[in-house]
Figure (spheres, rainbow, N blue to C red):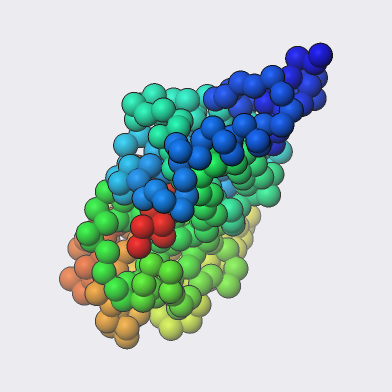
Length: 359
């Protein structure tokens, strides 16, 4: 009677109200749930299967990322970056980011399944980023993941984005897990230091009282007229011979992270010295200030808490100056997340889900 098609909600609607289609299965009746409860129980039963194949979704901000984790290892990942789109705006516009996820999530899902050489019915768990992030972006990933898990009748796992970053250093190397573990997550939206006693038990030891370090660096880059994202531009243009500008004093290591002061210093310095600013000198000096502040606190808490492992994850973990500084520090033995897993990615979401499901 109607040209029925599956919608992203996991039920059947006329095509004129379909928002976007899940084409893995095709039926011509509205009672889709009844079909799957009988047809797919033997394929994927959450109470009987080991969760060996996990399909993971990460849509917390602007990049759409999907990965397949098999027996705890990343077998395929596909990420659609929107960096070039947002360069002209100088930052992320949440509504555009949400629409980008909606446009890309289906095709990327097909891509990772093909790369992994598996069928959709081989999946026995679906994981997605539940929080924190942009509400609209999170919603797209959540609805798609929930619909797919319902259609497949498999386990659905909500993942804290921060836990993904905290354990991203161990992706494809789960044998490297050791507790107690000091994990620093540094990104555009967060600067948090965790002390983990297990996969799920932790204390927040320190966190920023104002700006995240990634946000601070992006804004410093913007004040200096550098290309978006400013933090990446600061890293690329860093010159140690020019990192000599006297900026502001560091707070004692036991105090909370704070990056609003160095950000305000740059803003005031640029406004007072219009036309006379050496952008490399200012940018290099302030980047060094931020990295020194991070390492100073890591040294302090490493001596105080004596963890078995110190790790760093998140987008700022890709910073070359940070990597060089911790490598040269004889008082620290820091494990940095592999560069490809530092930004927002579905591999870390699926990996942490595999730790939770198979612990």
